[in-house]
Length: 183
Image (cartoon, rainbow, N blue to C red; front, side, top):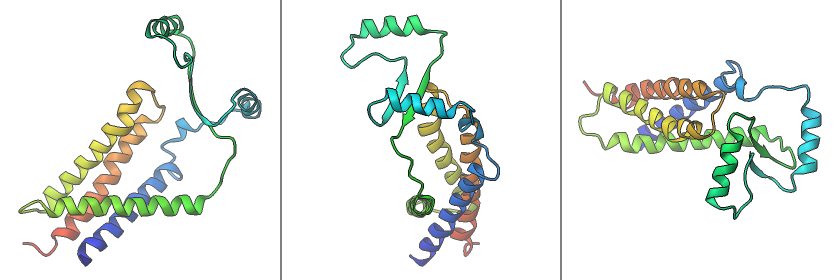
Protein backbone atom coordinates (compact mmCIF):
# COMPACT_ATOMS: atom_id res chain seq x y z
CA UNK A 1 0.00 0.00 0.00
CA UNK A 2 2.83 2.41 0.89
CA UNK A 3 4.54 1.67 -2.44
CA UNK A 4 1.32 2.39 -4.36
CA UNK A 5 0.65 5.58 -2.40
CA UNK A 6 4.16 6.90 -3.11
CA UNK A 7 3.79 5.89 -6.77
CA UNK A 8 0.48 7.77 -7.00
CA UNK A 9 1.71 10.92 -5.23
CA UNK A 10 4.92 11.24 -7.25
CA UNK A 11 3.17 10.20 -10.49
CA UNK A 12 0.40 12.74 -9.85
CA UNK A 13 2.99 15.45 -9.25
CA UNK A 14 4.81 14.50 -12.47
CA UNK A 15 1.55 14.69 -14.42
CA UNK A 16 0.66 18.00 -12.74
CA UNK A 17 4.09 19.52 -13.42
CA UNK A 18 3.90 18.67 -17.12
CA UNK A 19 0.42 20.23 -17.30
CA UNK A 20 1.78 23.35 -15.59
CA UNK A 21 4.73 23.59 -17.98
CA UNK A 22 2.59 22.91 -21.03
CA UNK A 23 0.05 25.63 -20.26
CA UNK A 24 2.47 28.25 -18.86
CA UNK A 25 6.21 28.29 -19.51
CA UNK A 26 6.20 26.26 -22.75
CA UNK A 27 2.78 27.71 -23.74
CA UNK A 28 1.82 24.86 -26.06
CA UNK A 29 -1.85 25.88 -25.83
CA UNK A 30 -1.34 29.54 -26.71
CA UNK A 31 -3.15 29.15 -30.04
CA UNK A 32 -6.40 28.44 -28.20
CA UNK A 33 -6.10 31.46 -25.89
CA UNK A 34 -5.19 34.26 -28.26
CA UNK A 35 -5.56 37.93 -27.47
CA UNK A 36 -7.68 40.28 -29.51
CA UNK A 37 -7.57 44.05 -29.05
CA UNK A 38 -11.37 43.94 -29.57
CA UNK A 39 -11.96 41.93 -26.40
CA UNK A 40 -13.75 44.70 -24.50
CA UNK A 41 -16.33 45.29 -27.24
CA UNK A 42 -16.76 41.54 -27.82
CA UNK A 43 -17.30 40.90 -24.12
CA UNK A 44 -19.81 43.76 -23.93
CA UNK A 45 -21.63 42.38 -26.97
CA UNK A 46 -21.78 38.91 -25.37
CA UNK A 47 -23.02 40.35 -22.07
CA UNK A 48 -25.71 42.31 -23.91
CA UNK A 49 -26.83 39.46 -26.17
CA UNK A 50 -26.54 36.33 -24.01
CA UNK A 51 -29.13 36.01 -21.29
CA UNK A 52 -27.43 33.22 -19.34
CA UNK A 53 -24.18 31.37 -18.82
CA UNK A 54 -23.59 28.44 -21.10
CA UNK A 55 -21.93 27.01 -24.15
CA UNK A 56 -23.07 28.42 -27.47
CA UNK A 57 -22.49 27.11 -30.98
CA UNK A 58 -23.18 29.61 -33.76
CA UNK A 59 -24.85 29.46 -36.16
CA UNK A 60 -27.32 27.09 -34.53
CA UNK A 61 -31.04 26.40 -34.68
CA UNK A 62 -33.41 26.88 -31.75
CA UNK A 63 -34.55 23.84 -29.75
CA UNK A 64 -37.40 22.02 -31.43
CA UNK A 65 -36.25 22.76 -34.99
CA UNK A 66 -36.87 19.82 -37.30
CA UNK A 67 -33.93 17.81 -38.57
CA UNK A 68 -34.71 18.89 -42.13
CA UNK A 69 -34.66 22.59 -41.19
CA UNK A 70 -31.41 22.15 -39.22
CA UNK A 71 -29.88 20.41 -42.23
CA UNK A 72 -30.96 23.27 -44.53
CA UNK A 73 -29.51 25.85 -42.13
CA UNK A 74 -26.25 23.92 -41.86
CA UNK A 75 -25.90 23.66 -45.64
CA UNK A 76 -26.67 27.38 -46.04
CA UNK A 77 -23.81 28.19 -43.64
CA UNK A 78 -21.12 25.94 -45.13
CA UNK A 79 -18.04 28.04 -45.87
CA UNK A 80 -19.18 30.89 -43.60
CA UNK A 81 -17.70 31.82 -40.20
CA UNK A 82 -18.79 29.94 -37.08
CA UNK A 83 -17.99 30.13 -33.38
CA UNK A 84 -18.13 28.13 -30.20
CA UNK A 85 -18.41 30.32 -27.10
CA UNK A 86 -18.21 29.34 -23.44
CA UNK A 87 -19.85 32.29 -21.70
CA UNK A 88 -19.55 32.97 -17.98
CA UNK A 89 -21.27 35.92 -16.32
CA UNK A 90 -18.54 36.44 -13.74
CA UNK A 91 -14.80 35.71 -13.76
CA UNK A 92 -13.66 33.77 -10.73
CA UNK A 93 -9.93 33.75 -10.15
CA UNK A 94 -9.08 31.04 -7.68
CA UNK A 95 -5.75 29.72 -8.93
CA UNK A 96 -4.78 28.08 -5.64
CA UNK A 97 -7.96 26.04 -5.30
CA UNK A 98 -7.98 25.10 -9.00
CA UNK A 99 -4.36 23.91 -8.81
CA UNK A 100 -5.09 21.95 -5.63
CA UNK A 101 -8.09 20.25 -7.23
CA UNK A 102 -6.03 19.44 -10.33
CA UNK A 103 -3.20 17.94 -8.28
CA UNK A 104 -5.59 15.84 -6.19
CA UNK A 105 -7.32 14.61 -9.35
CA UNK A 106 -3.95 13.69 -10.90
CA UNK A 107 -2.86 11.76 -7.81
CA UNK A 108 -6.18 9.88 -7.82
CA UNK A 109 -5.85 9.13 -11.56
CA UNK A 110 -2.37 7.69 -11.05
CA UNK A 111 -3.57 5.70 -8.02
CA UNK A 112 -6.27 4.13 -10.22
CA UNK A 113 -3.65 3.37 -12.86
CA UNK A 114 -1.40 1.78 -10.22
CA UNK A 115 -4.26 -0.47 -9.18
CA UNK A 116 -4.67 -1.63 -12.78
CA UNK A 117 -0.92 -2.11 -13.25
CA UNK A 118 -0.71 -4.16 -10.05
CA UNK A 119 -3.14 -6.66 -11.61
CA UNK A 120 -0.76 -7.44 -14.49
CA UNK A 121 1.05 -10.71 -13.92
CA UNK A 122 4.81 -10.68 -14.52
CA UNK A 123 4.84 -6.88 -14.79
CA UNK A 124 8.14 -5.18 -15.64
CA UNK A 125 9.43 -1.74 -16.60
CA UNK A 126 8.54 -2.11 -20.30
CA UNK A 127 5.01 -3.35 -19.61
CA UNK A 128 4.35 -0.59 -17.07
CA UNK A 129 5.78 2.12 -19.34
CA UNK A 130 3.89 0.89 -22.41
CA UNK A 131 0.59 0.42 -20.57
CA UNK A 132 0.87 3.91 -19.06
CA UNK A 133 1.65 5.45 -22.44
CA UNK A 134 -1.35 3.61 -23.90
CA UNK A 135 -3.55 5.08 -21.15
CA UNK A 136 -2.38 8.55 -22.18
CA UNK A 137 -3.17 7.85 -25.83
CA UNK A 138 -6.60 6.48 -24.86
CA UNK A 139 -7.30 9.62 -22.81
CA UNK A 140 -6.23 11.82 -25.75
CA UNK A 141 -8.26 9.93 -28.36
CA UNK A 142 -11.37 9.71 -26.19
CA UNK A 143 -11.40 13.35 -25.12
CA UNK A 144 -9.38 15.92 -27.04
CA UNK A 145 -9.23 14.19 -30.44
CA UNK A 146 -12.85 13.03 -30.46
CA UNK A 147 -13.97 16.54 -29.53
CA UNK A 148 -11.66 17.99 -32.20
CA UNK A 149 -13.35 15.91 -34.88
CA UNK A 150 -16.58 17.86 -34.34
CA UNK A 151 -15.29 21.17 -32.99
CA UNK A 152 -11.75 21.74 -34.29
CA UNK A 153 -9.33 23.04 -31.68
CA UNK A 154 -6.36 25.21 -32.51
CA UNK A 155 -4.19 23.39 -29.96
CA UNK A 156 -4.97 19.76 -30.86
CA UNK A 157 -1.27 19.00 -31.45
CA UNK A 158 -0.49 20.40 -28.00
CA UNK A 159 -2.93 17.92 -26.47
CA UNK A 160 -1.19 15.07 -28.35
CA UNK A 161 2.21 16.27 -27.10
CA UNK A 162 0.75 16.51 -23.59
CA UNK A 163 -0.53 12.93 -23.78
CA UNK A 164 2.73 11.45 -25.03
CA UNK A 165 5.13 13.45 -22.86
CA UNK A 166 3.20 13.49 -19.58
CA UNK A 167 2.10 9.87 -19.69
CA UNK A 168 5.54 8.82 -20.94
CA UNK A 169 7.15 10.55 -17.96
CA UNK A 170 4.64 8.97 -15.58
CA UNK A 171 5.22 5.59 -17.25
CA UNK A 172 8.98 5.90 -16.79
CA UNK A 173 8.49 6.78 -13.12
CA UNK A 174 6.00 3.99 -12.45
CA UNK A 175 8.02 1.50 -14.48
CA UNK A 176 11.06 2.15 -12.34
CA UNK A 177 9.33 2.58 -8.97
CA UNK A 178 6.86 -0.28 -9.15
CA UNK A 179 9.36 -2.78 -10.56
CA UNK A 180 12.63 -1.71 -8.92
CA UNK A 181 12.83 -4.68 -6.52
CA UNK A 182 12.40 -7.20 -9.34
CA UNK A 183 15.32 -8.74 -11.19
